[in-house]
Length: 52
Image 1: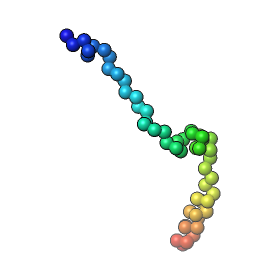
Image 2: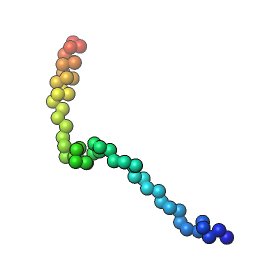
Image 3: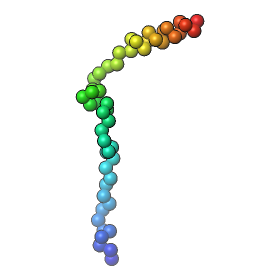
Image 4: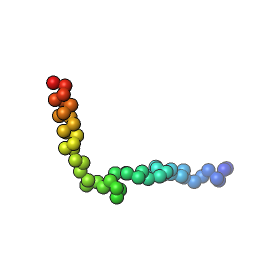
């Protein structure tokens, strides 16, 4: 009998090797930060007006 194989299998960790510098919820990119979409809307409206 092989007593080295009698234990339970080791669980692997599902953690990344490093943390992203702008990960959601970090100090640089908090969860409650709302993106300002006014500049985006202005560009979209200008592009739509130029196609008319």
